[in-house]
Length: 153
Image 1 (cartoon, rainbow, N blue to C red):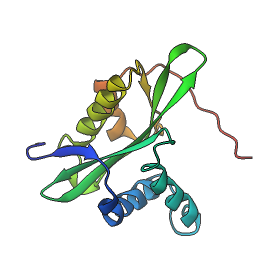
Image 2: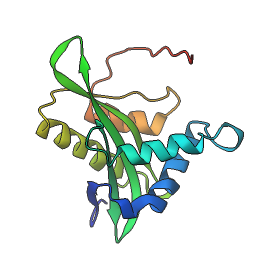
Image 3: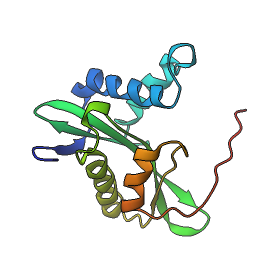
């Protein structure tokens, strides 16, 4: 299924293909049309991937020169660990390419990047309604039962 798939760090030349995936990811979570992310957020996110002072990183999954998925992750400090931890913030696979090992390959690549950086924990969150994603996540990580609260200020 994942034959010919390559997961690699994002490159400057990936901008338009990345934006297509980024828009799909945001639409999945209801951020499209009138609720679309502001252009400056997308532009800033993109630039952070290439700023060595930023702890934000991006990987893309590619087959035959076509980007099929993305993952964004960041390293941060924790009050429960001396070593930094890794938050896998965004994970998206093109809908027509799902169930072909792309999401798993992206998660495993984040695990490898975190390990190489001396990180011992990777975590993420998803919406309770994301059944297909949760089925994959249950095979690559442990659900710890936490509930997320959020308030925009």
